[in-house]
Length: 317
Image 1 (spheres, rainbow, N blue to C red):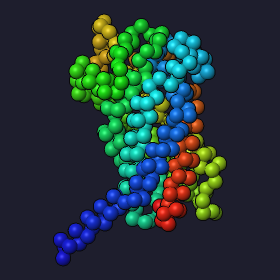
Image 2: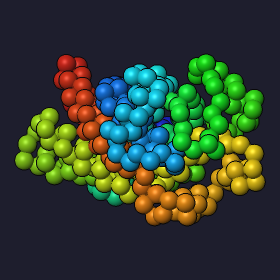
Image 3: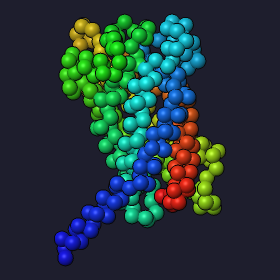
């Protein structure tokens, strides 16, 4: 009898994890993120340059974009679009699928809470980071190759595509180079966790007096949630970008910079060179890009998943 109960319990868990509903959520989240990132991709290019290139004097997003276009061509703000979009699509598919699977298994139809949303978001983030970090390392390299840096310490390698980047990094830097920036990335799982905690909380609050949120409401609460999460975790995002693009030359200081993977050390060095506000260099571009991207992503996600569930005659969880 006990074995039968165990088998039934396992079947319920498997059914909750491998469900059509989770697939709908995952595909909708992936499509939403790809749509939003494509539209606001130049803002992410400006943010990444400000984070990595410490000697760039321009501080505003429009000025950085104008510099990039002037120095590198009109299509330069979209350099690295395909690998970023590919990574983002897979990353959001994994995150949304894991998030909704954990909700189904843990909550079992019961109402969620702020603490549960944060915990589920954190676990989903850890799974996502461990699976997708190699793709993000590669797309960071591809996105920055060909860029004209003010910082002479940066010596980028040239890659012909995603496959070539994987091969060269593996041959020249070793397998573990694909997980450069994993530690700050694991800390940064608090970013989507905090984002989903605020989003789900605001969503539950608004749904108390209605059955479905309007497009404007989804856009606004998505923007608020992402703004809070990004501001709280931005210094770690800067360290993450530096680690993913840690390709420098041969002096003792530069060797040390290239080899150290200690987040505290990198934060200290950033403050020493640029001051405390150096931890937030590029925040304007990041906030502008990430708020608009997240808000549009949630809008597309909610509308697409609602439409899919409706035409299939299923109830949206």
